[in-house]
Length: 415
Ligand SMILES: [Zn+2]
Image (cartoon, rainbow, N blue to C red; front, side, top):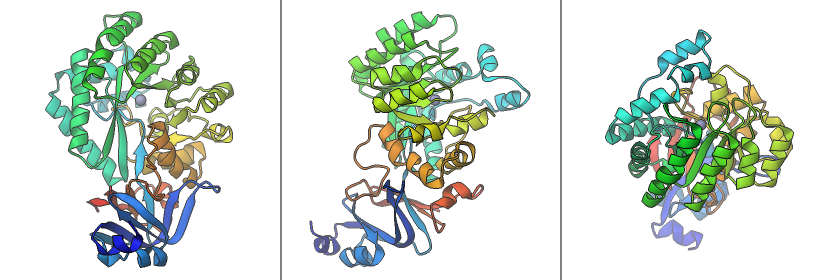
């Protein structure tokens, strides 16, 4: 279709024009931007992006199904939140207080709190309840500009509940404009009354085949860390997942250095996540194996601890990605807040944080359709930000600047 056809035959879905700044994606300077820009959308994909007068000449806004005058505002790709545990039940706000009084995450877990407490709540919750709660969380994420979110299972730790969680995740995906990417994480914690080895046997023999049979997960993740699973146990889970067509992901080097990053490189994982204790050699191995480091500054912030060394990873050439890690232990669904923490806590520039929250995050989910950018041909997932530049996403600490959110060229959220 030519531009003129698109402008006259009704195929033009959407135009956002006269934006102070349009962030297209990555470039030589870290960020590819257009000043006084516009984006035109045909059939749900970006048909043109560039100078507003040129784009509007080829794709007149008055011919579009919908258009937005973004004078003085900024247009960015929709955020891709590449790591969440957004499907859960129950309340752990009291643990927030206990941690402030000095209890450690590991102590709470040893007392039956933490993940294991959420497991009990999820087993008791109906699938409809899980779906409804997840949909409410997706509403908050969308309001802050997220258009794609990865959600893990892992609070079931038995076949029936892991499958119910993945069904709730699929159901939420069907009924919400945010695109939900499902990950199976049966190896999230060792249930009480069993050993790590015995539980891994159950994950491999029972859970993975059942999940694969239903075709309701894309990735297989494992918590490889002190107090969770060893690298050998983690490898067994991930290799079995590969046999069932699930791409590996690894929670690696968060609480201690145990070898999770090396394992991620060896099994060809899509991402290695957390990485607070990763060494230079680990980072080099991840870069060589094309594994995306996903950093979760919200978790570091919630635990009052140190942040991962994002600068060293960027210097090593790694495509650093950001995610919220939204879970009962890190109650944040807003990617702009993750960007703020990445800037203040890890010294990323706002531009680096934005690329990490969009294009690099899409890589962490193996999404190679241009998502996380507004390049021509990419899915038209974008946010209009009420600010003169992308810097405000990280700079404004207490106002949600995201005004309008578009997925597939359709306005799905207006402030
Ligand atoms: Zn996690």
